[in-house]
Length: 327
Ligand code: SAM
Ligand code: SF4
Image 1 (cartoon, rainbow, N blue to C red):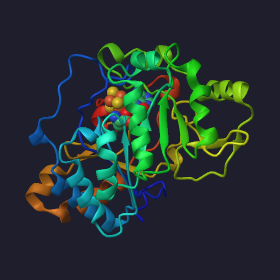
Image 2: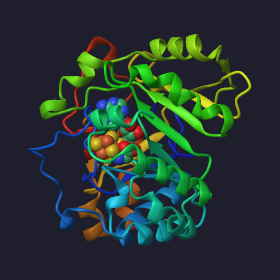
Image 3: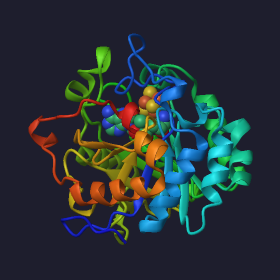
Image 4: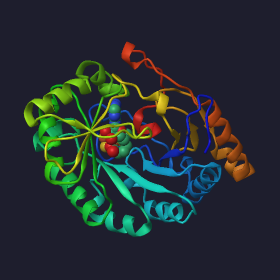
């Protein structure tokens, strides 16, 4: 296992496939004024598989595809197939808004994808249109059902909570875990927006302390479940429930000390920390000098991985946006 200078085991690579998206969540992407990577700037399926082989060779075992919206890559199945074929790839998962899963879930499972996390901020169709803007509740719900039918389980739902948009809907989301063995995870909003999204995190931020209090008030006490140091969520169960309610609280309760991840951006850079600008280019090295050069850079990236952020003091230094890093 690669250890960084803070003795953290870094064994989880999140791979962004694109910065494009078919939704425009109000805290993530503005409707207009965006400039996207060109197709030539993106890593190809062969190159992604090469990086995965290198990562496995140094001890990485968990891989997740993300974006932007990863299902928009026309060569997604090829990418998954190539990654799944790499020996010793342990976990292979994807984070998606689910809109395209009705058609893609089964082929993705057949290609070797194991699980999906699906982003759904509310069960209320009108409020969903206000917070996720494009796309509809029905589309995402059909995507979740398709994922479950295809065996991409356990289903994990990710909801980002914004005051005035969906904070009243948290208990209803949590009830999904009562009869289903799903995970419903509430994510604190981070200040990644640009354009008209820029002020949202500051003005509409809701602490997970408030989310939890609201769920307990409406649905009863949450019982803590045993912790897993590599899971960023603190997990709980509602009375008599089959599933899990999780809280991911990067702002109010940072978990940098147990962070085990490295990120690969769609344009071929190791991005050392979601909340920090540091990154190392590998696309040119891979194209000019091959996998050995990538291996050296990855080991160095692990060594240089920073620790800590100051989101709780309102201090944020990051040039890329969430959809450009891979959330
Ligand atoms: N499009 C896919 C999706 O929405 O799941 C994958 C990419 S998205 C950037 C990954 C995750 O980041 C989603 O679960 C989303 O809820 C979360 N996210 C986006 N913007 C965020 C923000 N400003 N603060 C916290 N989480 C955010
Ligand atoms: Fe798209 Fe995901 Fe960002 Fe929403 S959070 S705009 S679905 S990339």
